[in-house]
Image 1 (cartoon, rainbow, N blue to C red):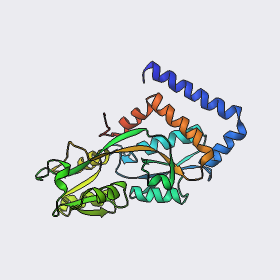
Image 2: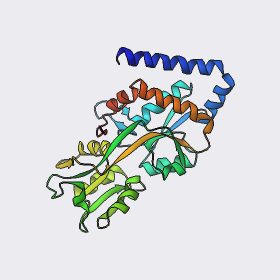
Image 3: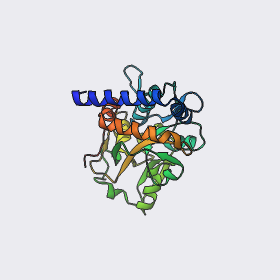
Image 4: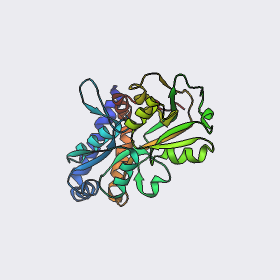
Length: 263
């Protein structure tokens, strides 16, 4: 972290600490709103650097959702509990039911009907993973009746691509592990999601590649259940500080996140 970012971080810590000290009643309400069970429950799913990945060398967990959750919990002086699911749709359902308190995910208009978002912190390209021997050279080539395209079940990719591709056979998959098995067995001709996940998947596969082009963008933000309005001003300021200090970039690097949009 350079001097400018360090100063931003120092100011942010001072502001948050002062706010909690100066307005104990308000601070207590914010804490109870964000972590009503007494701990901050962060919903994640394995296999996405935006959510949670496991370092194969030392077994440590990383991920943008994991680290943001840990940082929020530390700031509000509450313990954090990481709650793992198989796929993002399950995390969103858990948020809707109040079973978890926050996550980090694609802020779509459809999801905004069920959960509340901060401003986006990361823009991520959406892409396609295919065998290196595939005749598909760009995304538009998958719009073919013979192409079997895997997507995460209940994901935003499933709904968007269902409307975008009128010929492709779209196959919802229960988990990223299952998607890898289906790709290796030849049950799928390709898999579509954000490039952060695709590059992570590709590291565990032989003979596959992530295409260079993109078919869209994800705008990823902190998400919390509806009805947590009293905590949103704090989260809004927290998100601003993550951008201002460059901490979100550092978290993305630690998670090994690739595919961040440059334009």
